[in-house]
Length: 452
Ligand code: PLP
Image (cartoon, rainbow, N blue to C red; front, side):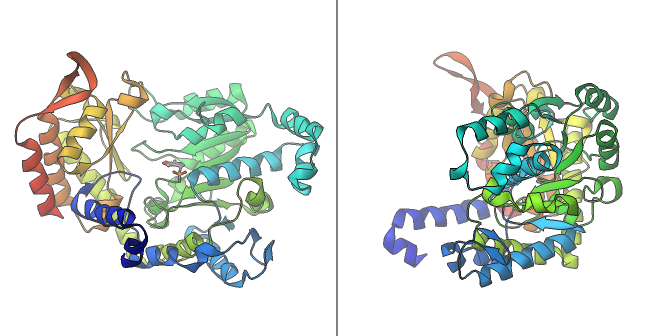
């Protein structure tokens, strides 16, 4: 840190403070983790200075042999780890990986001379008429994805996201009675809508998705099945999700982030069947510019770690811990969406405590418990204030916490939420303001540090 401090002390101080905060608080954000020192070091080095547009052995820049080494290694580890036919490790994030996948499927499936021309030429050589033809030919494609409030991600066709503008979109939800994906309703909707792509995968669904059934539905309506396993990639890598619940054998194309349960650097990745490989490899320049060689190096390290036997044990402990947390909360009377969990996350409906997700998130943060508010299905408080809190166990499992500690954490969360009441802003009821009973935050925070 001294080198940074000499240039911009405020950044050095913020890095130090971040390390302190992440070490000293209970990190229960389902999409976060702690990457290993080897992964972090592979990311912070001279690879960051290198341009390497293109793919391994076929670059638009000279001097890329070391980048080739790390990119090829990351792709090999990814293929071996997941049993995928092809891996593309350049996406900078999950959102990029999804865009690459959407374009790859469009290019493979849609008969479009304009797209073929756009891919063959430099963008500067395309005329206004070419772009108009491209919009016309690709314009009417359809995507069926899980709705945001059922736990889907905004890149699965949510209107404010580019995916909701690229495609005519329809979403599937969950059964209001059980909170589970209703495959019959989904199949019915797919038959009516005839989408080009069905997207499976989620950010806030606490149960498993049966990808064999999803593929059957996709095949019946002539859709390509894309699975976004960003959240549960670590459980697939660790062989906790197998058979019908492993997306790789079932989906034609699978995207992921590398930084959540997979415990790698911040980034994305696309895995696909061979027939989509050429289109996926066109991610640069279709969607991406220069890849991030330092992040690809870190992906290679993290994927090598995930191929070790101990990662399977880690993945199993994530799920055991999520179960223990869910049971601990349920036993104390908390209301859980779907009643529990099968994966790494728990969705707690805080309306029974008489507060919003926003109030719960703030009160927990005051008590040194870091979570994020999250909509529950058919949420009356909308996506900003919400009625839920999403809790995930990948990070604390990395810290070595086990099921006994999860029960203690359930108790601490329950204590904070029982002690929180809605507050007012300028004398009016507020969905954000809250009052935490005297002493609760300090008492709970003290106990969280004992756990770490
Ligand atoms: N897909 C899913 C299912 C996610 O949960 C997320 C992130 O929360 C993403 C994609 C986007 O990942 P990123 O933030 O790396 O763009």
